[in-house]
Length: 295
Ligand SMILES: NC(=O)c1ccc[n+]([C@@H]2O[C@H](COP(=O)([O-])OP(=O)(O)OC[C@H]3O[C@@H](n4cnc5c(N)ncnc54)[C@H](O)[C@@H]3O)[C@@H](O)[C@H]2O)c1
Image (tube, rainbow, N blue to C red; front, top):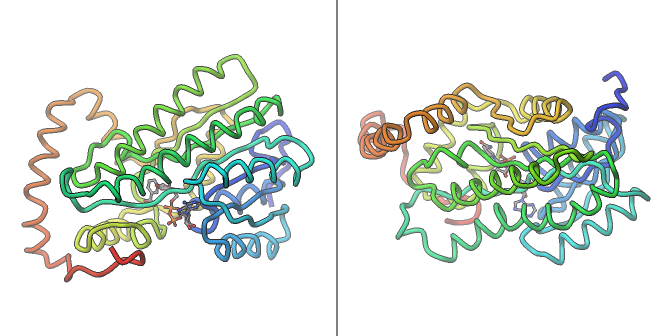
């Protein structure tokens, strides 16, 4: 088990994690409990949130409580904030806005407004609501932290992923702004920007058939474990790092985009035209499969 570090924000936290029923959110919740925290595991899938709590209880580390919450609904976030303060008997000290969904596989013009609204409702508005509603509580706590889960998609401009990219770019801007507003206060802000992490995000989202299979293949071969990403992020948060770009490919994309923006975009365009042909040649993409959401 871990040495007790009461001086660190991620140790003995009164924490709320959204999307805690799977993947990175589950890993955050388990790791925070191991660090002696009390964790509210919020998810739109209450059964998955309960599974996370059962994992934490089986380890006998910290304390955990499962809550249903759809982050795209303001009333659910309001209820979550009230419940958290009641449950802890004090303000929350660490909020992790993690819940998110995958969307991709179609270019702008073919995405459809319903899919745009669904994705932005969760990936962008969910994080806006979570930040807006929890920040007063975090500020009252005095020494506290906010971690928002964005993605390399926030700056990579990957084709056929506009609805995802736009939401994550908003999360990056939101986090940077809160960090600037919180300078000189007890609030630390971190924004996580990973590439592929081995989770359910490509299976459960609205990713058009061929692109979903491709994403799952790339995730399988290049993805890192959610546990590693959670530990790295929490440690970086304790060091008051704003940006966590945990993988070398993400750091390369970030550097290329900043230093060679025109070359980067032209290169992406070439890749976008070449990929379907390469994919067909390698036979990597099977016939389109329906995803869990039937899209
Ligand atoms: N896995 C990756 O490769 C990757 C890369 C970059 C960023 N991310 C981001 O990481 C975050 C976590 O995703 P993950 O990869 O662990 O995926 P995941 O699908 O394994 O977990 C996401 C969780 O969020 C929950 N959720 C979905 N919609 C919700 C809603 N409206 N309200 C509350 N909960 C909801 C799901 O039920 C699920 O438990 C997301 O924001 C995602 O965009 C993931």
